[in-house]
Length: 100
Image (cartoon, rainbow, N blue to C red; front, side, top):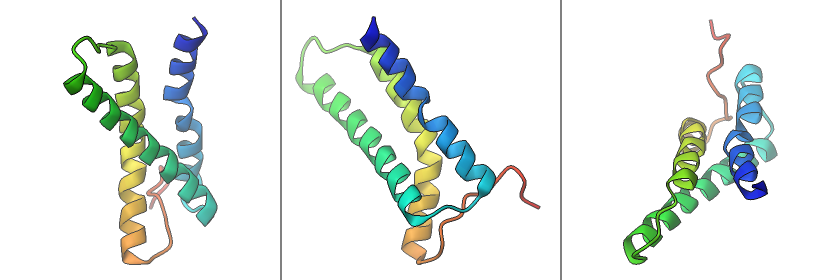
């Protein structure tokens, strides 16, 4: 029961951090590197599920996979802006809810 609860919490844990970054629109390098690393971790986690699904005959954890995909989708937008800013060598800035 605690493991299932941890899956729920992990899927929603990034939402407050990304929301605050979106509202403030700019953040320190350490913060955006940290959030980007969490997003990359989730992408590799999804690749692990794909690998296990293809190589293990009875690996079917739909609940874990669904929540992991939701969490990864939350990070994808952030990762897009992170990669774009990094490749262009400019300061990282998220488009915010209060853009003019």
